[in-house]
Length: 188
Image (cartoon, rainbow, N blue to C red; front, side, top):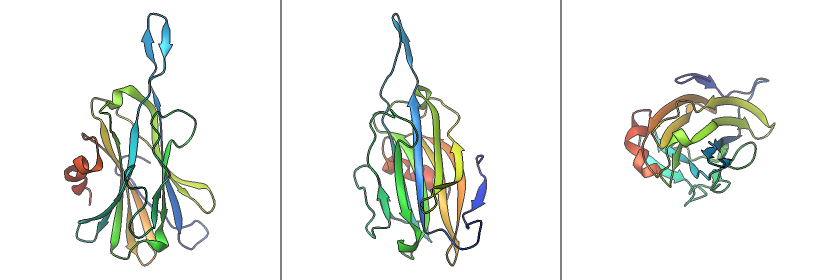
């Protein structure tokens, strides 16, 4: 996906998605020193912000609240380093269990420790159909720079049981999702 692109999340064989995973992956840029390069730890945090039809925040799932109030959104846990292959953090969303008042879920990433994105590489977010493990959309988090957060993507209710994903890729600054709310509101 490219910034601003919107894709339908309808299943290719018909029907609707019921369980999706938003995965976030990254690697720390190796620091070069006198004795070669060494790894550093980068703590990025994925969050899911749930909004109603009027743009009000109704719930948030992040490393300090791993489950939404309605139980439909579950964060798999905080990764403090970005080490390893694949998704470093993931948020599972049971679309059928979401409160009917939730019309949009915005996914954000930020550095709680304040490190900026010039210190990460190979960063991506992806949406996966959790029932088939099929990757539905992938968005490379390009544009490394002095910012320490990004509004990645949103999943929107498009009608009865229909959902779509929009790649946002908007750079921002903030150590928690609360710091990102003013920038997020522009994408609702």
